[in-house]
Image (cartoon, rainbow over all chains, first blue to last red; front, side, top):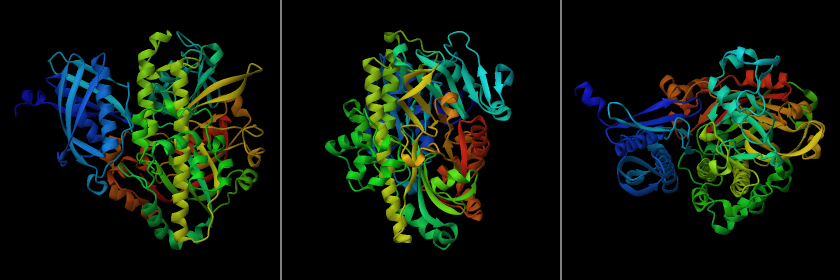
Length: 146
Length: 476
């Protein structure tokens, strides 16, 4: 894949924070950036790649701006992860008028199999940014408390 | 951090004089080396805390301070409700009432040695640790209410422990003023299967050996001798506290403007102590403190069960139970006047000195035990509160080492299996459901807890009593 199209493929990364960890999704659309940020969140806990998609959860959030929407989205996933004991591999997100509707696909936690490093307590305002870069790519990021 | 930014009051006390919106000075307790190693973010965060309404005396950072959310971790700030003071969800943190409880075993290291593996296995089998672990206790609406109101007292009523445990727990095991009706259904949902679980991250249950005594008189009263074996439990209010923190952080950030509060950082989200939102948070946060106290009480019970299978008949009595993420109403003297202040300690331990009326009789002459957790494989310390700490930082001290390296750096540098083997070669048994978790918690990813504790001692925040070294560590 040429470098340019590789950079335009939706992707995620972690960024440094002293005690905790930053999650960042980068993608051509806002919704995809949210999807990628969520994959980054799963990756804080475990490697998302080998996970299966045997379970699905429907999620909706509303917020007054994109940053609060990201925070709500991540917090909703943390809640769903905790109460349903699920690890999410993939997400389908739609965003319109600061309303998010999504399906999260994943599988039930298996301590031995998933080797989960840490649980996530909550999304924070720290380094919380949602913006469009000059090249048109959307970035959605925040630090999560672990 | 550049030390030229400070007015050095003495060897361990560094002042940032108020400028701009700061209402009070900010004070960092550190020696020159710790200060130089501190992240500049701590400077920004502690000066931001100094801008909050109703803050009294100063915003303080303990020697283990590091970059947190809004407040630095290791931050202490007291607010006066009569001066428009605030309560901040970010000033308490997500893991409300996270803390350390230490138990005497009555064993010495020679008695433990031949049964060490067996004890490690029994503890790992009995105490649920790690993400996704569930306890055997399932709370319904009624028992949830009881737990949120009663704390460790509730746990006792369910058969988890002895009456004598209570006097060795802050607040006598039950935080007054809890209002469970401000704890959301979601927070309850996250907690209903999590009672008696350790959690993950830096939470652990550790069997430790006393390796050094610094203050023989106090150590005698605390019941600590060289080569004694103790067990320490480090965990908090689990999913319930995390959910309360999440919800109120957002609510407070959204309503700051309504209360005419200018937030230099949204993470400092707060509400006036006298406002409905402030009161709701206090009621919910106190319920979460009870959740943490109940959780550590149940884990104590499980620990007793596990130990009894290996050492039948021995008794595990509490040394003490401290919380290091709280906001508590306390009386302090400010400019010669008694004041009722709401003291936030985020990653800071309460350290009441000798004679404090809230301490049980046994600690009246010594001050309270201040339990400082290390990280997996490193030392922990027992300190005692001092009279001087009252004037220095509203009777507060450090809480641990603080990370020196991020999780991703740590997991790139070390492999879990190699670490477990290396620690085993040093005589330390690690049991954990996650090798990646072990790598992220590598001992060298943390600052030197001894340096932090030495500064707390020299500054007078608390006084060193004993050093503990790990023997078995159950990692979440």
